[in-house]
Length: 81
Length: 415
Image (cartoon, one colour):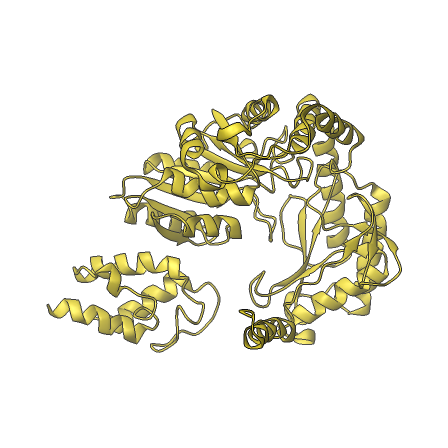
């Protein structure tokens, strides 16, 4: 089964990257201007649907969504519960 | 003193940062009325120079039209200078209602409400008609004023890739559960001059039970067969739920804007939109001018037809000269130079040749997409455009960009 961090990376590239920028697991997405903080909404929805979880709004902060690694850490908190 | 040296220095540091980054904006002073030929002082203190203006939003050449000026004078004489009140206290004149009615007829909508500017219309409309149970889905290249209005609204917000209908559809599917879904776009995009696919967007909105809002600031008055806007061009008049637009560009160019659309939405704005409730509306003198503009445009399409001819001439001239432009058919014609410094140097050299056009670069446009945005007007005569083309060719030759590909220009100057 595809690892979560690859699933997230693939989604981020398809959804937000419109040129040939290289995105890695630790590339700053929001603070790096790749993902508009507005557009986090669809990323949050994608994660919730994909992993059948619910991430509280106060946990879905720009900091928590800033890299693929951080996103995976956040999602894992809820997947385990 | 609250304004301490420490505070002053922190501001100076920020301002110097803008200067060092090359994004500090300088104004050029115009010593004449807005028109195709203007008298400019640049740089500050330099002797005045007559130049051809090809960067104004004066698409129909009405900013200094004698009939509009005369109507504005009459408005000033009969309705005074200011209202000294917001609309709902004692700031509504008969001519404000008259203008709302005329705009409604012109745009083919149900009702209209005036705002001090389109920036204010966009700032006020979303919070007035949407709640936290709703979602706004906007094109990623919408104008900054829409972005600000969206930020002020409690509804959820997401974006779709520029003009990507498949992506928009996926977002409409993603938010099926929302009470109201509102799709948001510019009619004509101000930096690239391309047109929204309003026909396809309306079809998607109908399929997914979503509303659509279009900012027509760069299209009202000249896009479409009779200049009603992008909705006319795309054959969807009467199907756009909300149109926001400005009177500060083609429609006389002074100031003011509006929200025009479904009756109930307009009434919601009248009751709840904060820039409407807490600010004076458009001054009587401007209202009188816009009324005349709409009268002129409703009587004849002569000006938008001339603009179309001028635009075709300009686009062909640039392409024939081997200059890279963004494809399209609107009077916003970006000349692509890709490199920020090149765009600034090119603009400066054009000015020396008597042509006033400004270079745009990051963050106003994406990195590596620096350009000179030219804007054509019905106020231009062919001799203006010929002179401007000669200048572009001369400066283009100096920088060796004529007939070169994007990659060749980037290889010479960098991104």
